[in-house]
Each structure stands twice: as C-alpha cells, then as structure tokens.
Picture 1 (cartoon, rainbow, N blue to C red):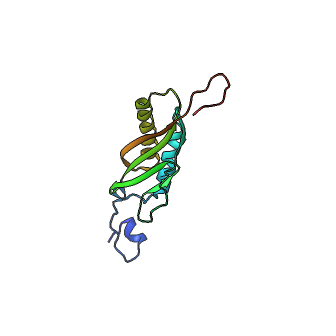
Picture 2: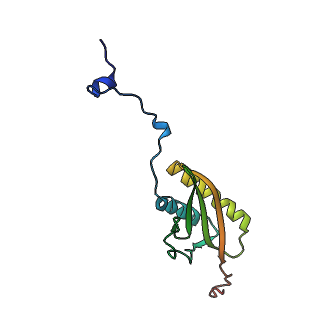
Length: 138
C-alpha cells in the first residue's frame, strides 16, 4: 500500500491540506500605522503629520494613534485610515488627498496584503509661504 508524501512525514496522524490562501497573519495596528505614515510622508506636499491632541485621554478609545495616523478596524480583515497632516502652501488639496490615498493603498496592500476601507486625509494646518530666504510666517 502506497502512502502519500504527507502521510509518510506525519507519522500516524492523517494530514489534511490546509487552505493557506484563506489564512492571513495578524498585523498590529501600530505596524499598519507605520506603513501609512511612511507612505503619506513620501507624497510631495505633505510637510508633517500631526498627532491628535486627544491621544491618551481615554482608556476606552481602542483606536491606535501613531504620528498623525489613526487606524480603525471596520470589517474583519479591513481597516479604515485617517491621516492628519500639515500641508505645504499652494498645493491643491483634492489632488494631494488623491495622491496620498494612492500611495497609502499601494504600500499597505502591496507590503501587508491588507484590505483598506476608507483612506481620509485631514488637513490640520497649512504651512506658511516662504519668500526668498525669509523665515516662514504662520
């Protein structure tokens, strides 16, 4: 009687195939937030990310804040992303928001195999204009 390779390697225990395609590793919200923050900062027009002023005020808040990025689980295997940023003077905000969303989706889905729901850019501040070496105002 011929045994399959899996049966021989498992000893007396029957081996059934495991559907690895359906299994995904658990990824911390902190890890996702790090990738999101890096992707957002890579877009021309984002000056800096802002941390929420409400961070840490309530132990009942289960969202994770990391450097201006808020991650919320919307459905199993899907997260919504909020990005709070300071943007450069003169950028077209709708175009910037689209570029940030594309960069974030590309990086997170490509590197983490995670589904993103909503990706929202909040403009918390606009950097002042600079003129010929003068310091920034604002």
